[in-house]
Image (cartoon, rainbow, N blue to C red):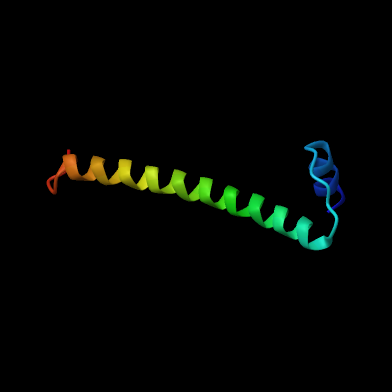
Length: 59
């Protein structure tokens, strides 16, 4: 929490209450999860296209 507070203060965000700190940490967590989810979706799409073009017979 201390590092989160110092990072926020460096970015010019004043943490007046623990609720603001919680909101910021939640937002960072959600952005991280969304980024990982997008990467996973892209990977699955690529794998799906590969399997589609490969066909049921295989190489």
